[in-house]
Image (cartoon, rainbow, N blue to C red; front, side):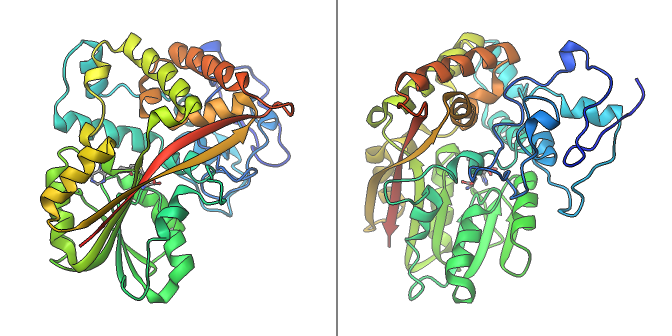
Length: 385
Ligand SMILES: C[S@@+](CC[C@H](N)C(=O)[O-])C[C@H]1O[C@@H](n2cnc3c(N)ncnc32)[C@H](O)[C@@H]1O
């Protein structure tokens, strides 16, 4: 097939040829990366009207391809090669060694878990913010903002955003405290860090690619506050991570993190969780025994016990919170589903079925305006040395 030419953002014409059915983007593709602030995508670009491109897309073209935005000035991309088209129409499903092991009913090892996480964050860099930024609590804060409230500039000069991902939290910290703080970001994913670098140019924040289990780039007692938004739950083994955090924290330092909340406190979250996990379980018989991360980090009691093992005499507080997203059930289903790592291993067919089921579940409680609500329970951990 000859290279196709079309302008995806303005003057928007559709290709004159028709894609073979198996190349057509699935109905969810592109939507999950769409930024929560309506009308912009995950990197703050204007969203491409989906009908102008191919019907399902609502996100900017760069993001839904690989989460790698192009230079902001290049909104018009004149030509699309066959190779680019193939990449754009790749299924979002990840077939890592981890997933293959689970499909065979086997247990993956720690290296395979890490490799899988890296593959997810390579293909879907920025997906966490795609949902988390738009989920707000009763006071109007998202979970990044709630976590950033821990910062006390009088005590916290050097701050580490551990597993910083695409840099949303770091950006909020800088917007709030500017020159009063020195910010460091660490993540193991080069693809996430690339997004963070675009968002926060030097010298706002020093970004390092490293594992939380070995943060040699930070000296002993080099940090006043470690912030970690939605990533402690993925870190396995967790003990070396806590030991490293203890090593780099100064006396009277603080660790604060957003972690999973109590599923039972949100019927909508529990329902979505059940749909996605039963779909994953169906395709991967040992999925239930092989979730990502250390399960002790997900429950407040076991997490507090773990922290106290490493941070002796620390004052540990774990507060519950709830952040919510409103929207049309189909859109909400795409956003909520995209938040679960399990959704990235589902086959196209299983994912489409799960999405339809999630939309059905979320429409059951829709109001008279037709909008449904997805409530995400969270916890904020604060451990004060
Ligand atoms: C759910 S995302 C959260 C990203 C970011 N904190 C946010 O909330 O937008 C989890 C992040 O943790 C990173 N990560 C997971 N395990 C890690 C580890 N052991 N060391 C460093 N980064 C890790 C992933 O690369 C990913 O960017």
